Length: 221
Length: 221
Image 1 (cartoon, rainbow over the protein chains, first blue to last red):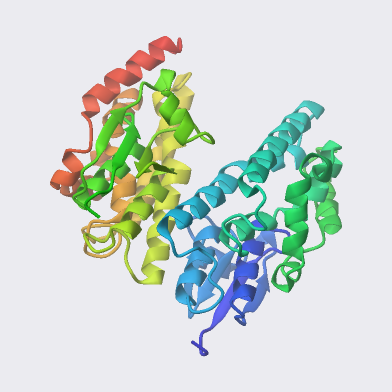
Image 2 (image 1 turned 90 degrees about the horizontal axis):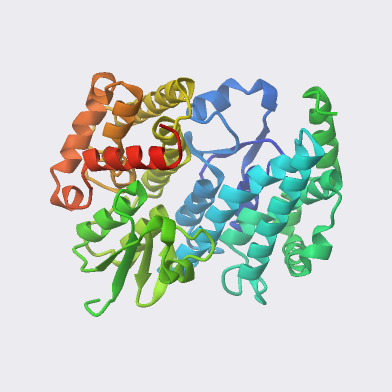
């Protein structure tokens, strides 16, 4: 499939966009990267994702695929002969989908309570929720190197993009994820040793600066 | 796979549980049905779904699978030789997942604003949202008999369980889905002609009575 045209519409601090970048890197695919200016979305983004109007969007030979976990599964199914991301066993696959779904349903909203808190109570609530979620995930990881089986894959990809935001969570709500979830942080560092991951994630300190900028713009600080 | 033991933990008015029942029926699988008493969840449910503590759970040879859309995909992958529910083409599959995900992210919460509204404004807001969502879905259906391609499948299964709740939505917020979305209602009736669907859905009038009972219990009426 050497003649495939792949375009990724993204915004670099997005934990969701990072999933797609990592999946593309794992498969060794070349793609054109287009950075979106989020308050001022491009006509291409609005045309390619008219329902949600959100990044990331992967455009494959002119046809859009939306929603990060769906894009990662799509990439895995189209380029199935290299670096499998989901396990082939249906039960393991269901477990992988369960944890990716858990991350999607829980972590983003609780994280936002921290970064965009209106008062101390909300930041505290967000911190409590984020730690609860991360501890459940740490329990699911157990003593394994990666979430499902021995190999880096779908659940790892779903979660590791949030690493960009950990520093902002910790600084905004004054806590240490490493102190509370040492095994999960060891997992994150293991993931970051992969070039496919490290080159796909932006700098956590710059993410925090962006949070501060947004908080000012929204009148929260 | 004639020796499989399948147990479904469910609560019959659940639109999510209906998905699993329909998928099992489409595949022609026998299963033991256990009705959960929702305010008083069984130890088996808490043991099988310790993370979310929610129905539906499918227990296959003693091993639990949770989250309805994940269960439906699991059923489709294990019993792949009969009545395919997801398309085999990766792009069509991504589209099917996109719409099932859209339904999950949008419809339930907006529907709850109607059925469990605290005041008229909230019911109106819920009605507006539900109609917007259903119109987007009607647009995605277009002139096709089913959501993805010519055959009844994953997206149809994801949405049709909500039919049980349409009467409650309409009665609580005083509107007609048929008047606003005639093509979508024609689709619903097409689905209901399938035995696999009609035998899996409970009576919409009884669902409405349950809503009224819950509203009283919560002090909303």
